[in-house]
Image 1 (cartoon, rainbow, N blue to C red):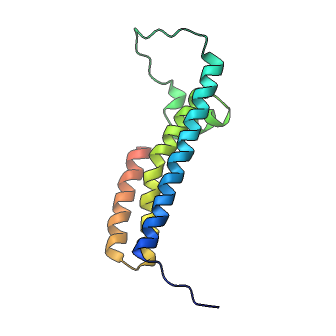
Image 2 (spheres, rainbow, N blue to C red; image 1 turned 180 degrees about the horizontal axis):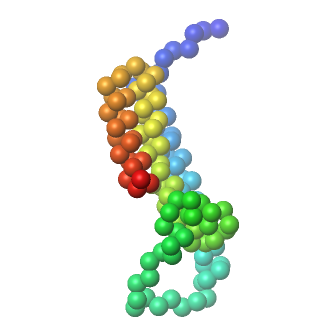
Image 3 (cartoon, one colour; image 1 turned 90 degrees about the vertical axis):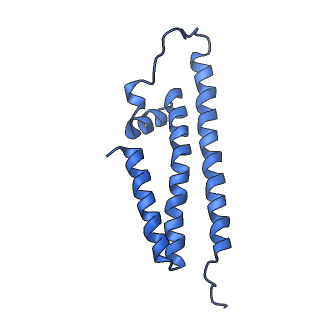
Length: 126
């Protein structure tokens, strides 16, 4: 049995690329499913575009978006897909923290943790 070689920078880049591709594909599938369901449920109604109507209150916060998506609400599914798309680069930064930790590059771990904290703060608003 050969000892496992440590990760190289190239290995980290490959895994991050896979993470980003997977996140975008999953997010696109959620939005597509929500769009198809929206057309099935409400495709026959005529929308009034003269007055702007934003998203309902239940689709403005993460827990409510998840609840709406998992109850098969079309708008909730689309909103959840967009949330997944936003979370994908945040997951990339979190993965980078782990990768830099494995490489024992503590300065980059610190800087990446600061960036991750800022991203999470801006997403949650708390």
